[in-house]
Length: 160
Image 1: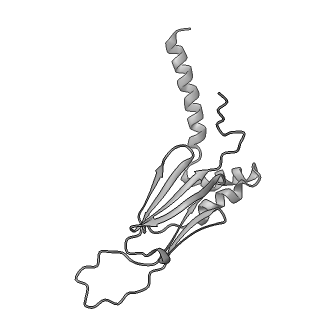
Image 2: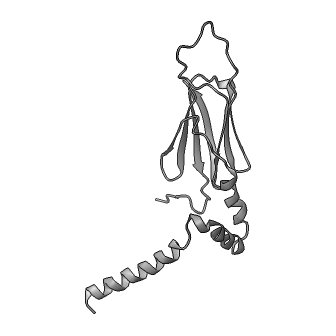
Image 3: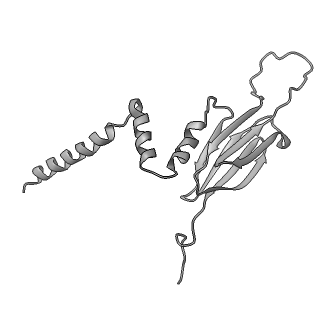
C-alpha cells in the first residue's frame, strides 16, 4: 500500500475523532454534563465545585508556579496587608484566602490613591489529591505551597 494512502486513512480517522469532539462546545454544554452525570457515580459533585466557584474579580493579583510534577506554589501579592489581617484555610475542597482591611484615617486628602487596600475573599478549587503543605507571609507576599498526595505504591523507591 503506498504511503500516501496510509496518510489519507489516518487523516480520515483523525477527522472522525475530531468530529465527535467538536459535537460538544459551549452551546451544548448542558448535554455533555447530562451525559457525564448519567454515566458516572460521584463525578457530578466534583464538577459542581467548578461551577459554584464564581470569580468575578482579579484582585488580589497572584502567580501560580509549577515547581515539578508534585509541587506547586501560589504567590499572592498583598501589599499593605499585615499578617493578622490575612486568613488562609481549606474547606470542602477549596483553598480560601481572605483579607480584612479596616479603613484607616489619614491626615490629609489623597491626590492619587493607587494602592488597592480593600477587603477580599478569593477561592481556588483543589483537586482531591492536592494538599496545602505550608503557608508563609513576608514582605506583602503570601506564599502557599501545594503538593500532590502520592500513594506509597506510586511513589519512587530506590533499591540500589
